[in-house]
Amino acid sequence: MRRSKPQPIRNKLDLADRTQVRLVRKRLGLSDSKLTSIVDRIGNSIAAISKEAAQQRATTLPKPDDVPPGTVIAAAAVGEQATVETTATEPVS
Image 1: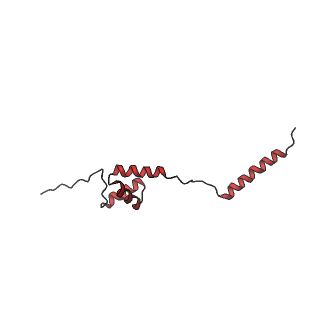
Image 2: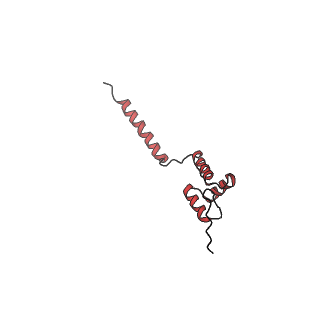
Image 3: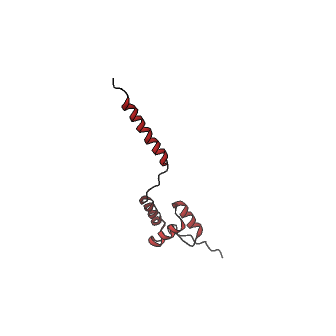
């Protein structure tokens, strides 16, 4: 007797299926703890999980990538002051 393999429900996340959990985590960029907390609050609907993950990403501020260290900022400020002083001391014709 040939039995068909049960098809998974495509729009629900099965936390017992490690492969499915890993794929959803990777696609949404979430950690295990964040994913389980979202599933506990929202439910196991993949659409609701992705919506909540997008909302969480939108509410957090991105970290600045290229912020120069304080010494570079100070040196740039000193350079601007020197430029202003040299133009101020030049004789007016």
